Image (tube, rainbow, N blue to C red):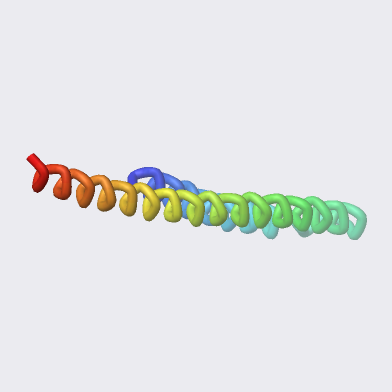
Length: 89
């Protein structure tokens, strides 16, 4: 569960970082047309990269949640087995 929380914190950090980078890039766009075009291309590549990172981290969260559910099921099953074994002794 702490793993899920830490991944969520990282996701929030990345979203904040994206907005900061976006505002910095937006302020720097008052140059000539070629520079603006270069900035737009860089910004677009950066966004695509960050979106892919976000997708990968969301998949990590999904897998961690699934793993947590499986661990919980295994724990419940082990408890059930232990209770059955206690009845035999």
